[in-house]
Image 1 (tube, rainbow, N blue to C red):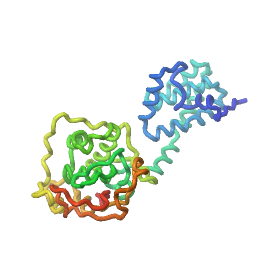
Image 2 (cartoon, rainbow, N blue to C red):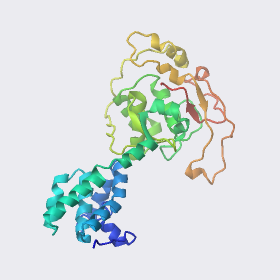
Image 3 (cartoon, rainbow, N blue to C red):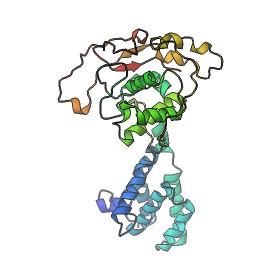
Length: 339
């Protein structure tokens, strides 16, 4: 008769959980921290697969009459597999070393491979709720995405007197206002992330989020969007933006505005310039409007200082070299982005 394990019991559940099971019977604090650090760095799909594994491992141990100690061996192996530290061919030997007959070890390995490693049901469900697309297209398709807050404090957008919420839209407004309406190099992005007054207060994690946003904006790299919530799922494994110690040689601009307040009229003819490799970029900035207000967590107990009525601003009329009169609500929403 097969053993029946109750996963409602915490100890039993832990034995079957690749997420919770210890690295060894005498796991140190350092090993504990390292294990969770590796887990946190995994893609969201892999985290979901590991979290879903206990019931499948329990099915194997119950059907093959394995002990809890042998369930622990399987759980640790599954975790190592997704950490990139083990291959499926290693599991039969691990099980036989822990008292599992060879034929049962082969059956267990086959079941684990089929139920966990080869099962793509979680991936299919995940991509029904997520989409991988560049930022510009995402902002057109999911309008509320631009309101996602990616830092903890308000930011000072160049050309506006009052600080605004650190939303994706407002970061893009500050970025393009400071660096110009053209494609930017990774070195220019690095200077913006580490040398501008606006970004100096950001933590390392916040810089990573902003770096992914700016790179997708410049290079059209895809971002994972949670479609229902209209939010970016940031990749913790994304390459970190290098810190530049000296100011880089700037890229030769594709066009040179005659005066700062003529950016849009210059950009309108951008696609006519020979050698242009950033087609229709000007369309991204011909319409800008203020989006609906939204409080940050630390503002919930404060009186709102910005009226609730939305306004519209046209950058053609903004003198960038002077302090403009700030509209009553200065939350910027970029629309009509590049398809």
